[in-house]
Length: 551
Ligand SMILES: [Zn+2]
Image 1 (cartoon, helix red, strand yellow):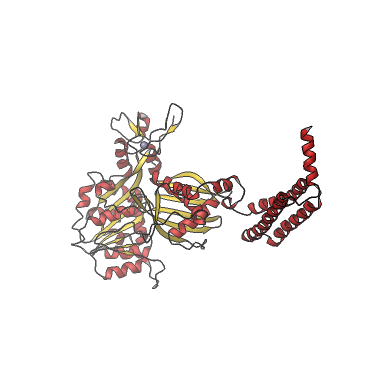
Image 2 (spheres, rainbow, N blue to C red):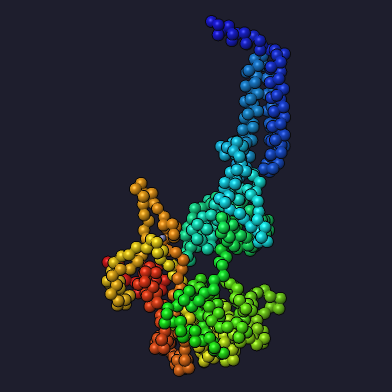
């Protein structure tokens, strides 16, 4: 009974009466909230580039009608509910509409948005830095960006990407547009591509914005290729990176390349075996001749070329290089970098000709791939020592290609003092490699005559009692750690050169080279397989040695 009476009482009080100070206050408050919302919709509609006049008008009209009905209706609560329904419907439709036009970070009234309002954003950004400091190419460390800025949206994902890249020892990181607004992430680790978790295209756009500013690139240039540098610092480790961005039809691409610290490689470091080194060291006092350094792309040819050059004393000889893509700096050596778009319109060969006029003792020519340069190098090798690097599969391929490039077999080979050709293989991780008993048939087919009891292969993933995979901490579960060079080498005497010039085809050339002491790639690689440094399957695959059939 009592309840019914009190309800009646309330209804009676609210009946057509707006004089209650509480109700008046509520009414005025709602009115001002409505005005503020009109203002917000007007500004927001402009910033998300939708019809501002229409949405502002709709919301204002809904509010006006609602307010009018509220006053006109006799029951205060009912009037209020009608007002809420009118303005709420329009406001909600607007929010759904505007959220569909913006990126996730800019959506309002979503769970993330509400969470963000209550969380301490600065603190969470600091956490997402994972202890990273980014340093610009000019050496200026940059602060953690202000929360809710484009930089801050790119900062978190960039930190997590670089953290993962460093942990996994990636040398190259690429982000390439894939399907459905995602980016494919690839790490090159020890020369092999590994796919990593995809990134949302939206995150990548913010990463691009952050990275471009960091590397001093034009943030508004999305099409033309751009190149810059930056540095990451974490704990005491400092790593330099090169950033490449370029547009494609599918979107902008990112490539981040680790800048390796300069490595002064000795013949031993490079991967030459004990018996290969003495003949190469004997080239030290040589004053003229032509030496080929060969290998496929990415097989360490430039490093091998540098090691050959370092064999000579730069204080006793004037050494110069001509290179398209220098990999490192050489102490006391004048390195010349060829620019294809040079103002004089000089070709690679013309620049070599110019360099030769300055009278150097030793010249190293990187990436020789055209007949003009090859011919100039061959011609000048009678009076100077010239090292030339070319792309070739192995020594015999290099000799054949070189003859063809020069266009005159006699000119090409008459001063040829030697050839080195290189390959890089992934080094088995010593921490997790597994010994196994090889199939005798495999050994027989690969011509391994030694009595071998076991070989090594990459370790398999271990599991905890609970079935959780455990990564080897040394190699992060790849089974390999770093790369190992495998090289062919030969130093030629006059007689061998004459035989080569007279040789008919590659088969004949190969037998001449073998007779003169060429140790072949697969023989060298097999030695390292037996030592437990390389996996036999990788060697078979890379060198296309006759692979044994599986039984
Ligand atoms: Zn391992």
